[in-house]
Image 1: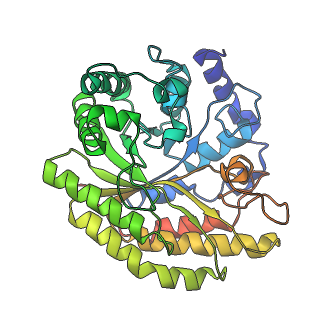
Image 2: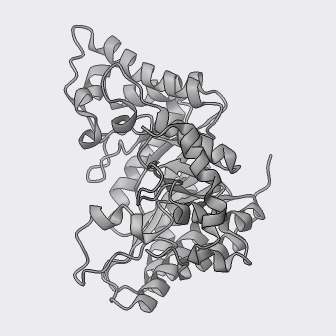
Length: 384
């Protein structure tokens, strides 16, 4: 494995390589995080780990690192903090890659989020956890396994990250109820797991923002999911669960007519009502994983890119009107490495989805300007 020192040495050499990256022709304009800071906000992105020279959305890729260093003030690991990466087996913790990412962020003055201490969807459990035998005292053993994971992560990184997604996606989008798994059943139910996870995280990392993160969206058909998230958050307040913020994943997409202005107009009311209900309970908001699925849009890049930019700005204008939002993160800086390229069925025209601020050649698209204008227009955040 490449050492942390080797990774940082590679990162230190990025300056000269970055000067040749196409995007840096626009360096006369301020980066997105610089714009965000003027309004009391932070802008950032997910990032991956990869050895130097690998063709990945990693800080070891000079062209990708140039985007991060131009535009980002906060990062989040795309996969390297999830159980599949951290826990190869029931007894082992593999923190090397996340530590490298933290070192990179520290070197460049960027904050870091931790995503996620528990992902509730069983298809993303490591196999050993899915098959785990909780024995004759399942509650005690489940609390030991989950508690050990959260405490070790919190104690090791609680002074180096600004927020943890404590639990991810436990609300079933189809029913609004809570997902069950072998872990929730062992510990006494999904509510018991939620309460235990958040209380344990608070004790292990008392100064870190604790977030419940989910993908309830503003598009039609998400009302049941949103209602389930509100019920979860209401339960937290009634039970005294130390959750500070709701993570709005913001994987939004253009569907139906493909008219961004019509969709924004149709969806704004329900989304505002949802965010008003969340913030009325005293929660902060974090835009944690934003991208725009270009769905039925035509092949023409200019048409597609403008529609994506308009839709992203419409979403951000509404969401950033809530001063409880202080961090905005996209789920990847360029189309080439977006998870949407492999997660969804390919577009009918065989084209890459144009879902990120920069294209596959690391060149800025209209979405960069749209995000910048939305950040600049956001109400000023005033620290307490």
